[in-house]
Amino acid sequence: MYEGAIQDLIDELGRLPGVGPKSAQRIAFHVLSADPADVNRLATALRKVKELVRFCTTCFNVAESEQCRVCRDTRRTNEVLCVVEEPKDVVAIERTGEFRGRYHVLGGAINPLEGIGPDNLRIRELLLRLGTGEVRELILATDPNTEGEATATYLALLVKPMGIAVTRLASGLPVGGDLEYADEITLGRAFEGRRAV
Image (cartoon, rainbow, N blue to C red; front, side, top):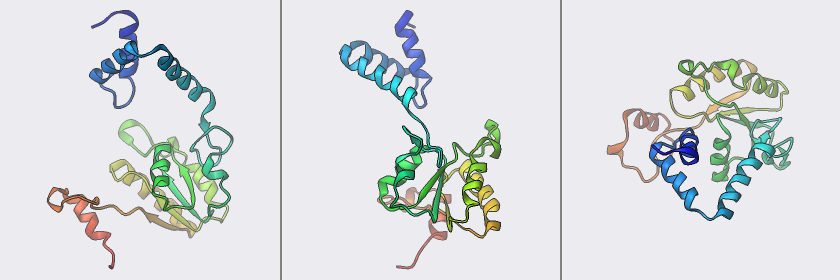
């Protein structure tokens, strides 16, 4: 539609996840009309994230040093390990303030349609961590979708013979939701995961 640099920017922005053609166009024109100092800060932040951010050598969360903030925290227990798909999942769990254990980031979920199998994830590294004998409980916090369920089932089958307790995050009705709008699977899981009051 446009030519030169503005179309190049729209095309690059459109390649970002969750950014469609219209959003890419809106962002591009915002950048075009923005103060040059704001655009320079954005460009600097993009360069710095590629230069400085890497994956933690222990849990594979994002980090700016050898280990991430969670792995460096000596107040956390090593007996509970929470397995998540992506670093953004660590942030979501940390916001609750409920978990004081350690994490392991798989780097995705098993998805045969996309060509992602167990060998494409950090499962081997997880088994090495579990082999130390420190972990007593493994919490499977993969997404509650087909790929996440397949990954959780696969991991549970691998880990149970090791004598480690394997648990899965509960799923069900959201706070503030209405029963009439819940789908059958969510409502069914809410019944399965009910607890005494």
